[in-house]
View 1 (cartoon, rainbow, N blue to C red):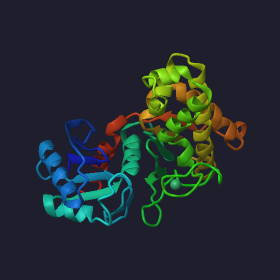
View 2 (view 1 turned 30 degrees about the horizontal axis):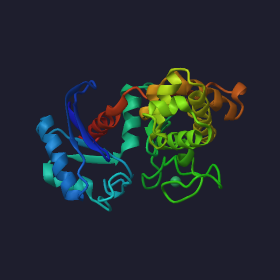
View 3 (view 1 turned 30 degrees about the vertical axis):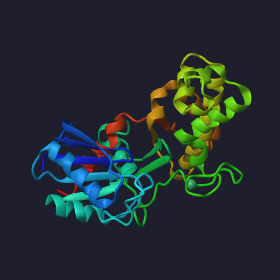
Length: 311
Ligand SMILES: [Zn+2]
């Protein structure tokens, strides 16, 4: 099978691509995500598949949340109306095609291994810094999902028992201090306490509207408060990356999510802090901490790569 379809189902949109055997995108389509249960999600997915063409091409799907090896979406934080849903079987019935479903971060890592930042690596982790923290593990030359395919939930281990509450209901998880959302919260706390006029100006003068991106904009202009906040945030991120590196000993950690656009404003302090937290930095091969290459299409491309394996 030379061509495959990949769908990335997120909280805001369903993004689809049709990929050729060399990884070139031959068609792309997107629709807003419905929030009205599985049937509505199937209908929207069918629309995207129809727009992409490619009659009979197998379909891969990446979706946030807990996805078991039978393609059932048990729980998806961004799609609360889709629970214990037999997504693979329903989409197979609706399309008459071969369908395979996996977690969105897992397929994004598959894309980065096949065509992106981790090409040629045998041991790579993916960490996405978004609303939460997503993760994927590629170990010894293959994707690793654990007993139920629920592994790589990197955001949910405790780094500070007295830290802020995590979206999952536990206190002090890494995600609560190191996600993209956490950068916004840290910045709002800072400007509420210390002013941070340069950052507030980027948010239109509204301290309550400050988000991570405003810190990035101010930092790119050399604002010292913004650079300070980014250093604090980078240290929070590095704390978890070093723990993961100590446990898995990867060759590379690929960082995804919108904050990657900050470039060296983030990766400079992040690599410094990672080195400080990593065990035995001077006595081991370097572990690369690099930005993802494939951007917002990584999930859809990886889902299409996944579909090759079942065609
Ligand atoms: Zn949590």
